[in-house]
Image (cartoon, rainbow, N blue to C red):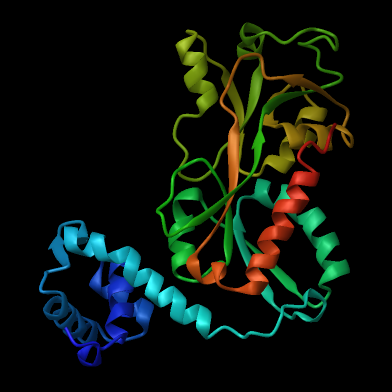
Length: 308
């Protein structure tokens, strides 16, 4: 094949179809009509002498040929994007960038206090936006350019998504210092834990919690007295009642300093939550984004155990 006969814009069509695996969504991603993208797909198939994407009930499934050439095509596009970046060195003090980070309330609670303090000193003209997203939404939001980064726990992500582990988090149980059902110096056992009345902090799309699965294995169960969706209200409700709440260790120790709370280790071995910073290939070519990635990683390493 003669390279002069190749329309390199078709590689962007390939990239969009590979990410979206849906003709309509790929067309929206590129800002073109669906009929135009369908025409480009025909030309792509002719160029590679392969169907590349096969229509199924679950969308456009890549063929083996598409999977084999995808790394080279993406690398080619990334090289072109890198060549077109502004070569001027990034100066944080002069940046007016508005960064958008996706994550949970807990991610905001953990990151923003130290990040805002740092940016106001080192990059005072930058601005931040924190938007709520679930882990299963992170990849789509990054691919669509709706967020620059995401902070999520658990799960696995496609190879096109870059990841930086940030921290691991234990769970803790908070009780009021005036709790009439649990003495201040009493060691909290799993049986005692199950007998107490609980505030349950639930999140959208969450099934049975890891705690309730653990209790079920031990032939125990707990009484959920109150369900809330914002973890920050739990310490205030616990302080003035005999209710208990199971929260992140960071939340327990930081709120325990402000509220009259006792803090107990969770009374059984339980899997830690592992949080990572996620970003896409566009951010990975952007000096401003790379600087913020290093900044976030460094700040959270410094504050890995804020209560110690």
